[in-house]
Image 1: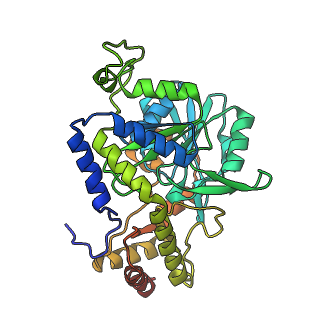
Image 2 (image 1 turned 90 degrees about the vertical axis):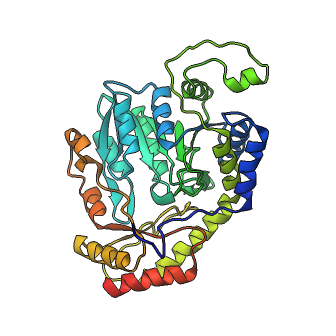
Image 3 (image 1 turned 60 degrees about the vertical axis):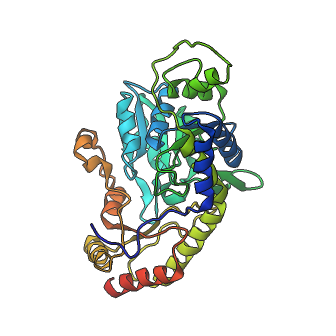
Length: 383
């Protein structure tokens, strides 16, 4: 185990999270109840969506979204080949087929809208967009393509809580928030996310029927919950769908509420640190810091740097490791995983190239300017 001097991510926790957890313990109610309900209301208001459903994790959010949209055998789901594997795994879990699309390019590793039209067949039912690193995909163009082909649109917004982009098609142009753009959106609150609660997720939608179906599927398809019966609102229940136990508990919801209250401040801090990275690394020949032309407010979940080639990436990653500075890779090319060999299609050259050359640098709200500088010095010395 490496004793990292500069970790890839770190928690921004203090007395607020301690008080939130203690509040739940003193309430003597641990399973889904009042804290979850409050978390859902506060999150929906923040995103600007009509509905928010708290769930066990981001993968559960994706699974429930697919099920609620009735995706299944015979359906194709177009999605980026650069993403965490959860979106593809859940596509297979509902019996649908993942169809992998290419990214825009090295400087913009989100799903290329131009490729969606070419990948659309008579079996295509939905598109999953992933807002990579906290930067929204080209949603205006993607929404147009989905409308033209009658495709459902799912936002994988696990990196993008609090992010927005400026929609040029609206007059006058104004910001639109991640989680309030497609038919349904999915968020993750894993330990390394901008809102970190350990495990947890959220689904947002503006569709009343989707909200109802997701809530039912979240808890075994039951018509009432333990919390309802505890409050005397019901004494029995029916089961109207084949659902799951994807509920969020009270302690995780309470931590989520505390983290939501800090989100905008922490995202601003992340923005400042990314600007420092960009400034210090701007002169590296052949290296790319993606999203230089982004129009809007990113969530700045990741700070990624793309090397001129795979050898440069390997050398810099090893130098950083030797200096006990942690890095990562977001993400391996999904069609190269053994479990997805049968789904290889086009070359997807930009995605393949990106996965070989990208390196994720440390980024977290409590990171210091000195830590950014030290990381950049190691990179410059070995680039």
